[in-house]
Image (cartoon, rainbow, N blue to C red; front, top):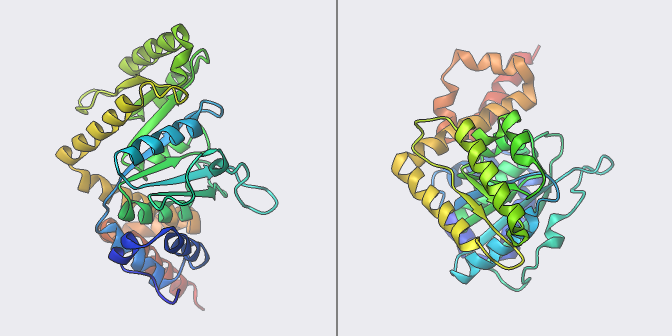
Length: 313
């Protein structure tokens, strides 16, 4: 591949082309052509981005598999980014969540990519953000499955449209999340393994109560709690309806401005990662945020170039 494809060619292409683009993004991350390609995709995102998070073992991969099947039944193209813990030896993805997804390799309407969390606590590296940028410009629905609970929810807010928190019945998760303030972050909550019956209903009630105590007022969105079973398919349609309703809510209340804020957050995070507090302090001199809202990747390269020039003897 000599150059990056146009957005139209990328949407019309197959999984092989998409895989080639993602590989090039990882190997030429700080290339000016790569930044221009990503910034161009930022201008015209097509798909809705759903971020799944929750503690290990809650059933995120099984739920992702069920969502893929439901979206494909609706004729929608789906891309999945599965964030895994990093190997301390190779830096690569350790668990390989994609091996647990039962997708048809011949179906060009489904694309799954595993990616290592690398050195990011929340699991969303610069490469992951770049992949999300490509996916949302190509497919109808993007699912981002994070490595687990913790800092990842804050990261997800800056990378996806809708945060889905998964909770397991009988685990006491809702109380622990309420203590940690995590209940302020999700846009949807799924109580998994609904086929457990009374335990799932109890967990749903606990979560609803925790949300009523933790959720900030005045945001205009009431977080729905849905009991789902990936095994039986119960609640999957309701969960998708909730995600679609949240998408409509965002469009009615300023989805474009939210995504501009996300771009600024991506830019700021790249500066922090590369240059630390000193780099962040240098942002105050110019209105970098205004530039980053439209061109986060190119703005970072420009900023990095200016820093390098200052360091020249």
